[in-house]
Length: 384
Ligand code: MG
Image 1 (cartoon, rainbow, N blue to C red):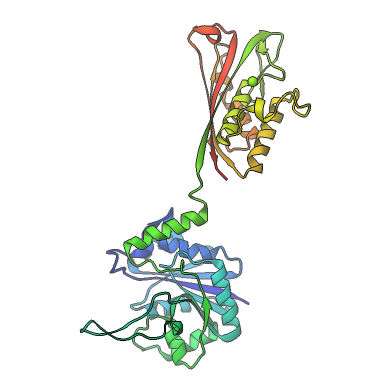
Image 2 (cartoon, rainbow, N blue to C red):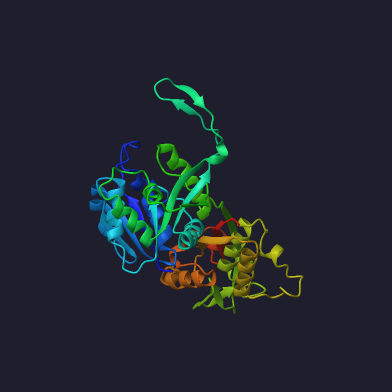
């Protein structure tokens, strides 16, 4: 089944003061969230985006390309749908018409309408009306009737049709006054229109408070509300002769090295403590007790791998590491890039998410006298 979509974003947004389709929403714009759902669906081969004059000028060139063809809106909604329809590739079998102001559309709903339209010719996403409806006499403000709510559904989009069904309706009512949806024209052609139960989240952005609700829904879906946690780590090792100097997993040229039961890599130890701290798992001595033969004499790189294992096991995600080394000697500035690259590789982070710097203790205390090297580290972890 060859499927395409027309996203209608030509409205002027009279109830919002400015076109609602290009209001910012959770990092994109309203229309781009609507567009993204269809573009990301492998079964949709082409998406025609219909834009009003201003939006066309401002966003047209940026959004046109790949699967997306941008066309100009018509004078009415139906005119816009006609322009979009004319830009569809030949041979398309089903067409979803979607409102650019419904950014919470999901692939599941779209797929359900594709399947139903392929079978019966026309399918409209809709939800049962939740409120009791009243018929109110115009001008008098008096209820004249309370109809049976069970009969009423609120129509949304996508409204999906077999290509031939939509073509017939658009041609037959070419000069017709504007309809608020295509389904009305299709119904007038005598075509049965099926209802596909949609979600109440697929509402239309109409008023400013709708943006607040939409961004809460999208952020919850995108995991944007994942709690961020910070962990702090510290380590210090004695600097002695006759040992290799390992820092951040790199062997540095020096006549002394750090004393410890493994390689004494204070940077890796402090960073691991920071990650474990963000997870509330104590420090490496507690998480990997040296009394356990499994962990006895564990190399620092293995401690890092084990720490990342603990992080993965509880569903956390490390997003940033910041470490400060305190050393009187050797001079660490010439080694920054190498140390940073190693730290990033060991903790499986891009280098842009790793920070490493060094300070001297200005000749004060044991570190200042060159008897030890210490490291402080802060890890930022997204909670499971
Ligand atoms: Mg240590």
